[in-house]
Image (tube, rainbow, N blue to C red; front, side, top):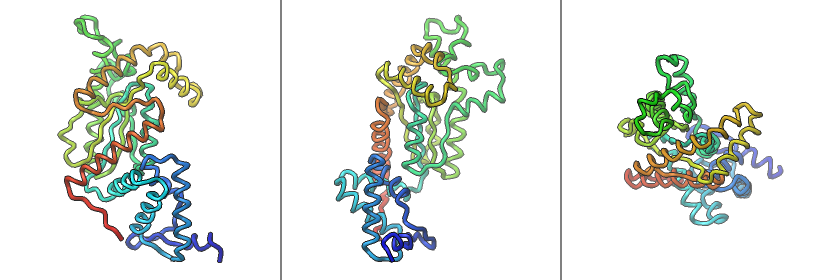
Length: 313
């Protein structure tokens, strides 16, 4: 029998269930440490060779993870070993993890959220714009005008007399945020009650506007994504236009870039006031690593406060 056949028969046993070893799933878990996909798959193959060499027909999930942690340390060093250990703690949490990614239009929120969801194995991912769209179906423009505009165009529904020297666009944006956050709070509350991990991204996730008193039964991690360089920010719209085949009007976003940047400035101020991390998305790989670092560090801090430990098999 050749090595590939031996590997195919090797079962990873967790309680009463068993499944063949998967390099793809192992690589996904390794990417949670911040490793690039290519390196993660390389190490997943190294782990596979280790399992083949053992000659065993079955291995517990816990022992597999210990082997993975050992191989990862040999290949990448102690820093990644510690990150992997923290990732393992996610499976032991007694609270669901909720990740909130705020940011102005075009900073890469949905791309980042998808990458993080993949690395953490989180299947519930939603956007505040989707919530706004649902609300629009129930509330007409006459009844709730703020939600019937883009986040950076909501100032159009604000009467000049109501502004009184304030930034009209930010006034409209804040009014829209207040309305949409009602729905955001509702889905967060439901996820917490169900004990379901979730990621929410959107321009309406402004620090200070959500009901943090609802978060006591969850591990909630909030952050704001920005693009500091204006040319890089504008470039995001051109890339998105190419990727979506022009589904979203490029001209509209470029024309309103100044308004979008002012929304970003407002978000940064709100984040700093609430001591929420601000992440510059000049490079998506670097942003992913930063976010994963924040998530895993938060898990480690929770571990210390609750004496959560990993069972070694």
